[in-house]
Length: 623
Image (cartoon, rainbow, N blue to C red):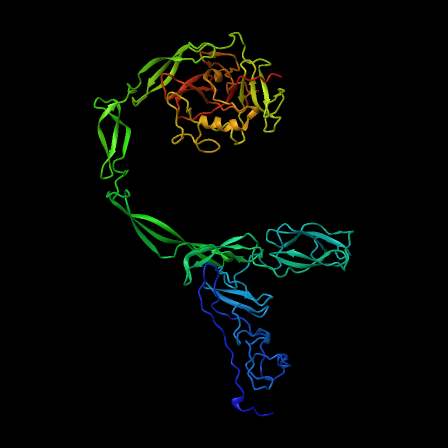
């Protein structure tokens, strides 16, 4: 054995373990400790037999391997990896090498890619040894996938399955494992053993397909990712100096089946709290309230149940409140507040908001114009608005309500004249004609529907009135929708345009009033018509029909069927009250309605919601 040369000509080998210290951030965790075998291609530098010592390819091991008295440069890898005097790029690595990264209290395993770079670090809160679900295993199949495989000892038949080209059908279960779902049979479609192909599989992986002469030979799914594109999950999150319990982010699986795309941090930090003082009324010295907001933690299971993620939610609590009930803005007024006069009558008063942000009544309480004695009655003359007798009138009876603050219609005396021959039996063949969505007459056998040539309207040939037919599909004209009364052209009480206090029971769940409904139907040109309107009292009354032909005053009597409307020409009719366009002249807040439960008409407050059936006039759909 030869002796070592003098120390001044040689340097002892020095190995450096590079350790980076940084915190996990919302975008990606930072490498805190590199524990892998990044030096797997390093020479031992001791015997001169390494391939890298030959020729001009100097091995960067810290020794003079070629006898030129110069220390080789490098980073412990092949000489091609030498960067900036032996300091390698922190992202570079030896393809296939492994490392573990400290990430929000967990160890994250990574493998160097084929280009020699570490993948981005994404903190998912899962330990390196976190268990995988059955569908996350490398050999998991895709749920619902099917294949034909050669029969073997697991065949469910009692006879042998070892014959050539005997196979069974297998299916991937909900647990991502294969299950035989058919008996073994002989298949007569052999394949070519020389045929091979590559098939996508699993999470962005691929497998080699071959042939054993009878059946496709499926190789192992390789190079898979960790998630399915589009999936999302919660993960730890922090700011600046590390992960914070209670803060979380949402990871999204990208097209390469890797977790990335962390969103901004949500939640709050465990143990934090804030206190805020608010004015009862902004800008006025009317007291304050103190609100304390604290972060409360809920644990969410992640990583197949092997870990929990603390998720923070800010909960606010009022800890002190000096505000008066129903605080108001000084100077604000509130008119027409109900009150009782000194004589015990129904009245109204105006309220004023004082400088202390409290309401104060402005005396005196004045009697309302409609104040009355509870239970008392009176009669009023009402115009029929008849199309055939403009001067016709009849009497209605009103009763004072229990509060003594207004009248309601409690009955009628007499009735309006009919505009048709009194001997007309009512429903008779040829009177009603079915009309299609496109505006053409149809035979009586036509069916209701939304297609152009299907039934959507009914034409009254005696009165030349076209009526919409209600649907039962949840659409704009559904039978169950109701509306409050509103007419912007009314000279009396127009109704509640904004629909603030009553019906929100229609398709758009807002502004459910009669005028808006009419304006929504007209642009659709239902049955070829764009002049639909709310019917008058006389027009809507003309549809009343008593199945047993018995009446008592204005209502059907005896044993009759309802709704009281010809059922074969007006399906989907709601039993109950339907608005008309006619108002009660003597009582502006009221409008007329017709009920198809008993066949009579009456008045009601316009703010109440009822059904609506539109009409169009002056048309001719006779065949």
